[in-house]
Amino acid sequence: MRSPLVACLLLSSVLTAQDPPPKVVSGTLGLDITSQYFFRGLLQENQGLIVQPSVELGYGLYENDGDGTLHSLDLRFGLWNSLHDGPTGGAGGIWYESNFYVGVDARLGERLAAGLTYKAYDTPNATGSFSKGGAPVQELVFSFDYDDRGMWFESIESGLRPSLVIAFEVDGQRDVATNGHSGIYAGLGIAPKVLIGQIADGDLTLTLPVTLGLSLRDYYERATGGNDDFFGYLDLGAELSAPLKFLPARMGPWDGFVGLHLLLLGDNQRARNSGDTSELILSAGFSTYF
Image (tube, rainbow, N blue to C red; front, side):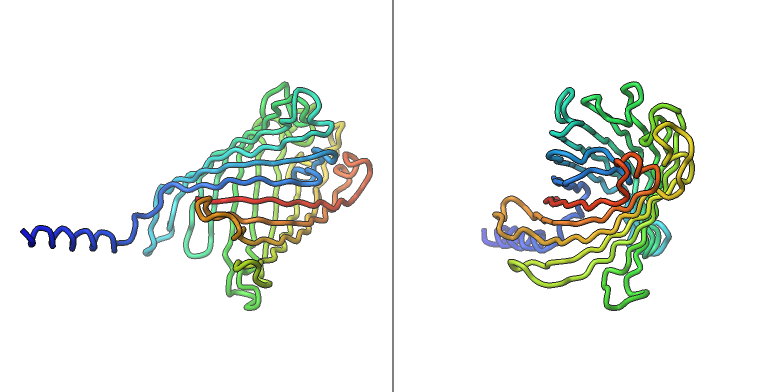
């Protein structure tokens, strides 16, 4: 009678010791609060409370840690929102913007990641300056990220993390809703990150993101149409982030951040911003992942 019992116990211990199956479904939840909302340098709201909740789910389609160019392929989709109690949230409720997106991300080799995303920008309360007859603005977005850790600066363990985004408006436009000129946007960025200390047994990190927004065609036009600006904006940021260790473990891992961004605007964006060429934007938020 003891032999079957011993065998079962041994089998149970072996199964318990094995590595858990790889996680196929992942996700993030987040909520940010910001003093002003500029979308790629285009003013959306600079008054009142601005709250931006988001959710994203990802599904692992393919993974290969061996040889070959394609190392992984992931499907992701999400919803991002902006809620305002200022002027743009007055007509029809506080829900100013809702963005739905679905995309595929690929890791190519050891350092390069590429993605293709469909995005739809909607205006639930009908006050958005980018709405076109109530229909969402739609984009196809190509993104590229390069992992340059250890290539240039040993003191910056994260590397500069250069990135490129090219967005094609396929229906509607975010800059002007009257002339029908769908545009092409290009964003160049870096985001080096350094560990600066410890707080509540967690790493306190400083990220210095820099983004340059450009118009490849008809993206930063005058409010009356025409005269496209090649230079849209330059965003110089500093963000402190740390895990929120004081939360109960049953709530899962949470991170918090505070950030300050200096926004420098091109001529047509300055005209939309009451003639101001620069803005300081303060933001804070928290997020979790699973």
